[in-house]
Length: 337
Image (cartoon, rainbow, N blue to C red; front, side, top):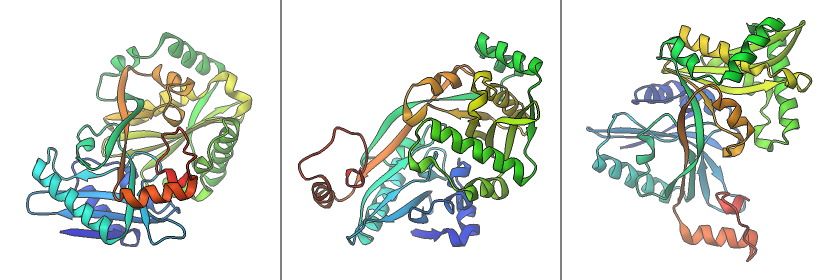
């Protein structure tokens, strides 16, 4: 049986997600409300032996009767109620998806998957392809604290101690003014790295996460100014350092190192299993990845799922958009490039 739930029915949406074997805040209704690029839906398939949930954003393809599916920013993807769903149950789920795609003129599916969910890449099965993108970094908070810090690079330990001696201290944001300061800091960072438009979140994005999702905003204070911060979330044993920022004038201090050190401590206090720091910018092993890698030796692979459900229509849409001038790119779907 296939059930389609909208974010207006948030209670039912979250009830289903929370019944899955593993999930993160990215899968919840409150987070999906923040995506304005299409219609947020939870596709729920359940039988006597298995259940699956797939939160998606359903988008119109302008000028056509067709639609496509994408995922929210972050790590989402399909979920299973069973830790090890049987191959036959997965096939039934896939067939239900294909029937739904046919009935709703859905041409393609793109979904980011969750690096910490080892079994998740098996859920799409033979529908399209699951592609390795880049490694992410995580800290195992179940390890003794001495073992956690043992994985820190020597330069990181030195810098953390230096920041403490310098008088940098970490506080939790407790009012709108402090949140707005972090938002300004974040936007300044996006300008500095020439980020894509999709990374420029509205103020409501930050407010909603802090109000509707178990989260905390940690700020580094130095000489009466907030100079760095991390918006962290907590969900089913997973702490995400979701958004980080540092004021341009204080990049030389690298205060985010002390912020993330405090985030690790907060995660242990809340009995989280993991602090997930994420990967590099846009899936690259760049300076951002190297920065995060100084905190831990533990790596996970970030993957994405790409599926063309209607190849004939997909090819026609791509040809209409690009004619014969196809670019060398991994962008998907190409008709939106």
